[in-house]
Image 1: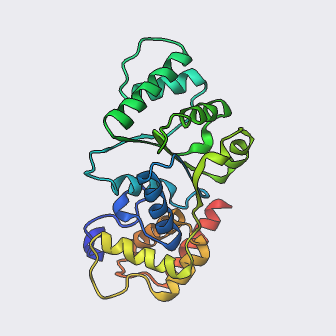
Image 2: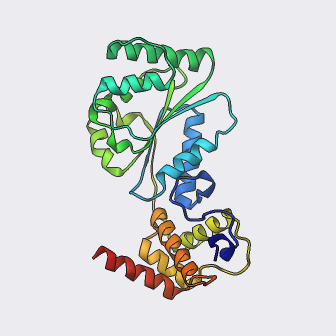
Image 3: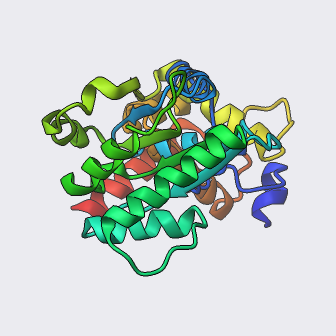
Length: 274
C-alpha cells in the first residue's frame, strides 16, 4: 500500500532536510527567529545562535532566510561548511562569494576589497549584507579573527556586515579567547529542545504541513509521550522516530501509530546499537 495513500499525505512529513516550511515555532525556536530578524533589520552586527546537535539550528537558519523573501534591499550569503584551513582560503572564498572581481593577491588586499564592497553596498546603495555561517564551531581561531576584523567596518549608525553564526556550544570558549569579540555580540541565544507538549504539537504540525487533514490522530497520546521520552524533545530525533513509526505502520498495513509500535521501534534501535 502506498505510504502517502495510507496516511492521506501529499509529502514526506518527517524528512530531516532543513525545509523552512516544516520549521516548527516552539517557544525557543520562535523567540530565536524573531530576535534574530529584529537584530539584522536594525543592522546590529554579530549574532550567535547556539544549540546542541539535532535542535533544529539549520532549519531555523533556512526559516530566517525565508522570512526576508522578496525584500530586495537585503543580500544574503550562506556558508554551510566553514572549515577553511587558512586565512587566505577563507578570505578568498568570501571575496568570490560576494562577487568581487580581484586578482590573486594578499590577505590584506582581500580585506581592503571587502571593506570597499561593504561600504559601496551598505552606504552608497543602502543594502544590508547578511552572512550566515552554519556549523560555525568548525571555524578556526585564525578565521574567527577575520570575522572580528570585518565587524570593524561600520558607519556611525550601523555595522556594514550582519553576521549570523549558527553553532554548537563548543564554539564559546574559542570566541571568549578572542579579544574584543564577545563584546561585539548583539544577540546570543541558545535553542532548547522541545517540552512534551511542544513535541506533540511538532508532530501534528508536520503532518498538517504534509497535507494531513483527517480528524483522526495518526499518533496516539500515549505514543506521543513515548516519543518525547525517547527523544527528549530534540527535533531531529523526533522526526527520525516518527518516520520509522510510519514506515512500520505501512509494513503492518496500519493507519495509525500506537504506543506498542513506538516501544517496538525503540527496542529495535537499542538492539541495533548493541
